[in-house]
Image (cartoon, rainbow, N blue to C red; front, top):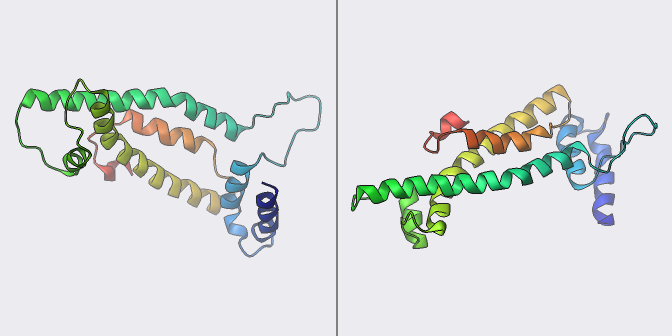
Length: 174
């Protein structure tokens, strides 16, 4: 870990004011403070002190959202599998069907695994598109404005797909 800290400290000169990659300071700073706590700390007694900074708090919120995501995966898969079971022997097609067949899971609404996998095939494309589009804009605006990357993006990127319908076109997600 000391070696990684030394590497990041050496790279800091390139990204700080006057360095050749100064415009990308927000990207370097986000990486540095993700790996290690911030070097800026409060020194006066007027502030409450805690080892938890805002990035760590946001990660805690993401961990707290994990049960919501798991329930969303199960419920989406259950609803889709129940609808397909009601259709009977209707012909299935598409990339989700191909993956379900490849995994050999099937469309049983009583199978927790089948529901979770089928739900994941609806949720994760939306989540990945949210991360890609939102992350691009977050980094772009941080670089242009010369601000740090906002810690709230991680939470927003997880909450946003939970509010969308599972069959939303990906271009609308972006």
